Figure 1 (spheres, rainbow, N blue to C red):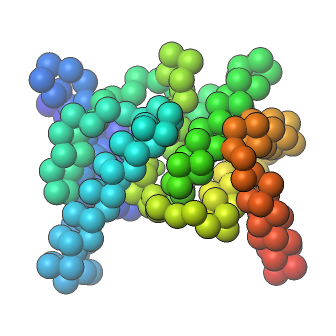
Figure 2 (cartoon, protein in one colour):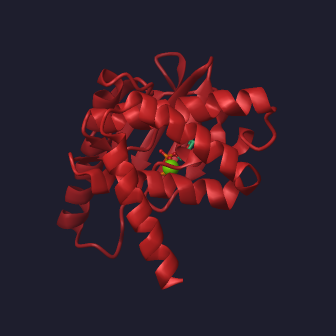
Length: 205
Ligand SMILES: Nc1ncnc2c1ncn2[C@@H]1O[C@H](COP(=O)(O)OP(=O)(O)O)[C@@H](O)[C@H]1O
Ligand SMILES: [Mg+2]
């Protein structure tokens, strides 16, 4: 038995039973426009990369789903029966929103402190469960020490907040950055880059 959870451009996500428990299966789909050998290589690489970063992030103190089984184009992971931040942030009362901001800033700080760029740090890829903020979707993760890369993570996050949580943008950004700075020693350099990206964007219009 399998229940479709989401279908993205790259993967199909479904809820299945794994050894009697709910599990989330992320299967990377074939892309017909790619040469088959190359296609299988890319799917393998991204699946492997996602699993690696899920583990690395957890070692860095960020909550991530447990991996139950790994195949070349498929990850079976713990199903996080929680709340997607994208859906719960806006309707949440102030107290809960502030906790969420702090958790987001802290998670980003931990990832960056550990040399991990997430690559798609948006509220769609964060799930709140039992007071913990889980970060998912590491398929675009990158191992890097460049402040510019971390600034891109922050920029994507900022853009996501702007488009989906505009009403709370100001408070959100202030609180997220506060937690980010408190938990990451090199945050000032990253923020300088962030402001540069912002400026470049503004001039382009
Ligand atoms: N471990 C999980 N537990 C519960 N829901 C999940 C889990 N992983 C993914 N999802 C849900 O599926 C959606 C898409 O998964 P994601 O890994 O972000 O794939 P995509 O690359 O298509 O964005 C997420 O936004 C989330 O709602
Ligand atoms: Mg996603």
